[in-house]
Image (cartoon, rainbow, N blue to C red):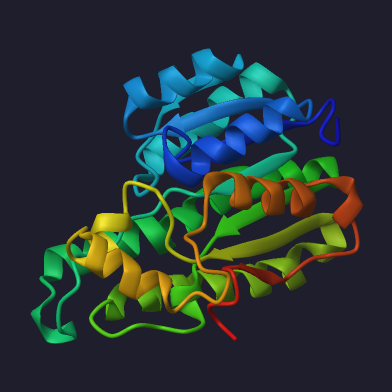
Length: 246
């Protein structure tokens, strides 16, 4: 029960890595708001784990403010924020990615971190404590061709993590990131372009441990970084990638 008495928001919590993190956090004693643009998916996970479902568009300021206010009302004190919601564009040469897709990727992957900070960091500062975890990607460290603007958005997230950590340290707020390699999530097909056994085998061949990331892998890393066991850790971007970035 490493999160006993703690409260958390998990964005993108209705599926994939976010759902895995939400399940693990509740199992370890936390109360969790499962926030997702897909309310039905959020509600399904919330019902399963005994959490709270909330619909949010993480790229919209009014929506993020409403999510934060709902969490403060439900929990009184918010201890943990997981910025997990993310998207990608279809693999393509950088100059062929549409402006619409570029704007959407940067809004969901980067602007969302700004918006959650805007509406949640003041609360954590006032409490003198808190843990923020940004779910970045190996793409921000070891980028792949044809995912240029997705790679860039995750590199932005890693830099944001480090600068948030140094600025918020005097307030008692820790900020870290995890860098998963591709996993069994709704984004997998988008990363690969198409999902075939041959493409999967080719992708897995680049991962020394020989498998994709799982929601459980991300949940275990997130649990540690957001628990008091990691009280001396801030500003790291932990690679949870089976050796992909070596």
